Image 1: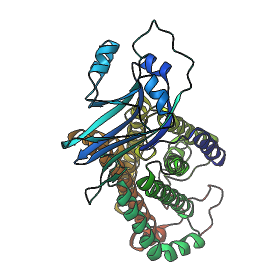
Image 2: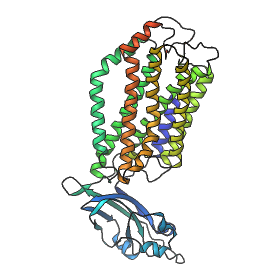
Image 3: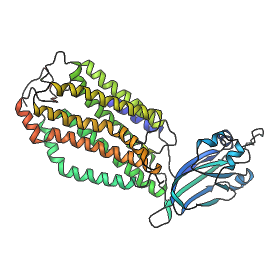
Image 4: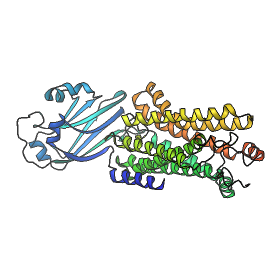
Length: 434
């Protein structure tokens, strides 16, 4: 697990790039010709007083090349079938670049609308002409929505607005919960016992999610001021989230698959143990590797995706990842059904049912929220999925924590027998009492 985490972190940090609503780069004539307009950025304007600011380092060269910025409202794939001149002519706004700074206001919009920004010049549609060996144009583009006071100072696109406040409230909730429950949790971890390993993993996953929320908050706090944020923090937030996902998967597969693969030699009264046999370990590690590969693939499948839109998976990798989670939920459901159907103790059945609720909520919340988000407006879908997944997985962890720490259930089960205790972490060759 440590080696896998180190590999994930290395890939994220080496591959992280800056993306934000302060966009800096080079206007390239060759790229504009190949793409029928060089893509610069996408932004969802809302309400009044939207603003675009373009700053050039060499306005005289821009004037010589007849450079211009093209703004397309709700640009769709139909434009790809048009000729170059027709495509450029479809732009709602064409901004001629001949000065060091250009300001373009966006008209009032009745609903949040995505706009795409392209660059073109005199050589874009003249495929037969030779592009002179001019230096590329360095630029900085700033994209603004109106803030609460009506001034165009808000770097957040419409689909991103509100995430900064959400992460602040999430961190506040983590802090309050930590102040309340840190002492009893610490005592439970120090005491050891049959639930010790599960509590360790759950606490580790919760810590990873807290780190992810903190990194996202730092990134978005800076992003709100300069439109660029701290890309390293955005990458770290995704890294901690991925580590929490694979850690949780490893724990659940180790618990359930360990019992399934060894049920021929293990009595039915002792299911759901952390079985460290080679077969169960191979299954758990294999599931973790598959999920890790899909997470990394999804991470880089869309080059224009912002760091904080990690949960809005719309690529092939994202669909495969959701299919994997549904498959894992069905697998765990079949295993737990076998256990519950043969269990005579109502106390243990309640234990397994609560465990199943926590597992299913963790795995199924993402696919269900992605499907549910289709009924919302475009600018609300990302926030619905992102906020919903974080809250549902937090609730899942609360359910599992209550199950393992509750005195009314934990100590009653413990009093039955330390040997037949569900989810015991002891090895089969260590049957001592706790």
